[in-house]
Length: 95
Image 1 (tube, rainbow, N blue to C red):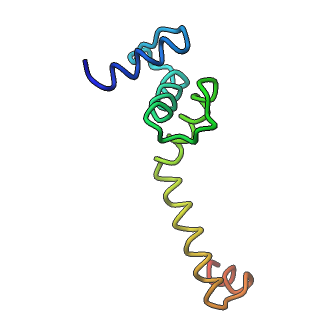
Image 2 (cartoon, rainbow, N blue to C red):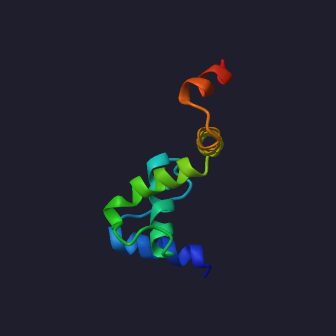
């Protein structure tokens, strides 16, 4: 039995629900992703089984290209401000 299968079985035992990865339900899949990250110790220890959907949605967001672009934009803004430009100067550069 694979590690993923064992994690899914453990999640099913914890929640008392059967998980079908083929059901296409985004919330179920987000919950599964959150549960796997929790069981692997990749989520903050404060997360509990009831938080798995929220944790999974957050993880999915952090894996998205939009999140990466947002982080790059924030880093660029911080570098511009650290170089001595004012917020008005930065706005002027961006049009």
